[in-house]
Length: 154
Image (cartoon, rainbow, N blue to C red):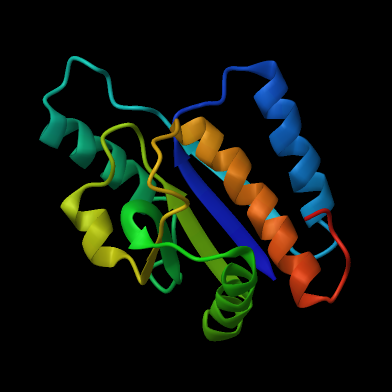
């Protein structure tokens, strides 16, 4: 199974990078994970122009046939068990390949939203897109542990 995470921006904090790397290592038992970063659009750009710039860069990183999930405020919230079931089903549906995108602080362009096959929301709370990256890789790891009936801290 191949999981690709496409994100706007770089993770600047060392502690956060190390935590993401730890879960990336843990995930390697279950799938091949690649994290692709595209540049954040500059803050001086108008919002729609920034969304378009980031969106075009993100869409350029995926195959036209990729099953695409977005981490999106308008997405579906679910518990970890349902996320696990949905993730495994997506791998089956997507030919063992799945791309998940995390947008920048402005969200996603209309083109990215239209291309999405599914949208997930972690919480009603606001978090940085770099923190969302850590939560996503941890929840993917947890999802595989659940799917394989392996114990993991609750």
